[in-house]
Length: 454
Image (cartoon, rainbow, N blue to C red):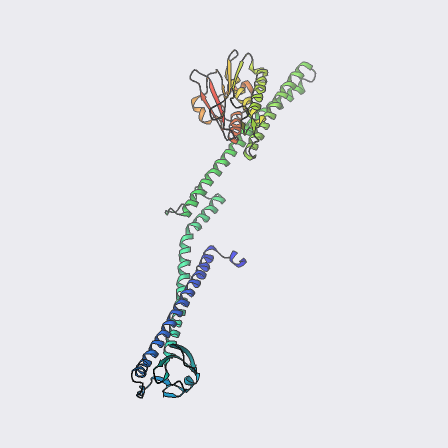
């Protein structure tokens, strides 16, 4: 088996085909040999019975008359019940090998007579006068030579058939694996970066073509992931550079304000804000990365999620940027014990991000509506609606992409980095649900998160 591991697929297919062909041809050859040998024996027996038939007929119909002498080359003998040979043209060594007793029925023997083998037929004949046995022998050498010639022909034919079988298997495997060789060469070129594109797909709609299409889809996904990661790294670098530059500037100003306690306090507080923004951005990136790698979340009852919702709304009301905004919420859970694949902390992050976006969308004095309810299938639906100007239509398809922002106003209000909605979608999809964003009929944006029960 270790040797086979070092062989190519083509060689293994050829060897396997040879093994199967050898077993099949051997079985056919053995079957033909047995059938031909049985046929030659039956022929010898039939010829011997034909030689004995006239003598059997004479003994039965003319028992008192002496039997005629057999023709030249016919080996026949008649032995009486007393053991006396009435007629004998059998070879001596054949006659000596015959049984002395009178058989009860016809008998056929296969005897070795010196350097040859003979088929002997014994036919008992009983009449009123005597009980005789007619023995007729037939030389089996002709049949054995026929069998030997057939065996030689079978061996030669089987060898030629195996060679043809091996050549055919080698040719067919070569033709079948040719697309694989092309795919391998193209894959090496794609890996080296010398070419761009996809693996070649054969014209035949077979397994190799299906494999090429699957691998091409995998390549596309990998390219999309690589491009997305490149964009994310680029955007993250840009996002980190801005607060880092601001933090550096704040610290420089703080150094210059060393003699002014009030100015120093102001600059340090601004530096703390920039540092908090950096920490929030880093934490959000870490959460997004964990969502890509983590196992499914633990289940949580709907009643626990209600508690997290109210805590998140209290936090939103305490945000300084919220101003005089009013945040209303409505909870309708017919099955509060229903469980969902949402951890309380993750659900709180969803509410925090959606409510923060809603706060950033409008002006003071407006109203934000938060609704948490279950439908007839106990699917949990969270909806957050603001009373702002809505979201540009062209932004809706990419609203949940990382680092995507509709305008600069929201970022200026809460320092958003464009990762909030991406985190919302990641948490929702991890729980088996969906997240969507649309504009309301009377203005404002409506964000909806739907999570099915476990």
